[in-house]
Length: 114
Image (cartoon, rainbow, N blue to C red; front, top):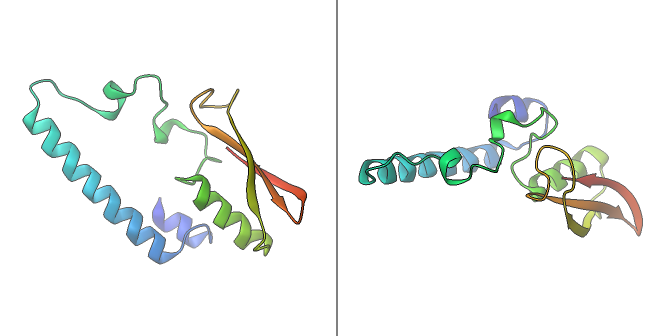
């Protein structure tokens, strides 16, 4: 998945390496927590009301609003893009869990991030 994001210009090699390192660290922590816990805990069991990343629609390919904003800046060639007026999502795969941002450039709406 990271290689595909790099190939599509959505993620730099450096960012992918950092994400892979974080994933490795998280997996190690989860393994440690599971081995020390009598009851098996998973992300799904700890957060049953949250959708799992792999179940999100394909359009939700970024792991943070900042990553999505950076991709928009790169794709549109507009460095002045910035998030504006974050609100709780009301629909989509993460209602009332995620945030929706309007994205503006030079005072005009340029898109949105959820």
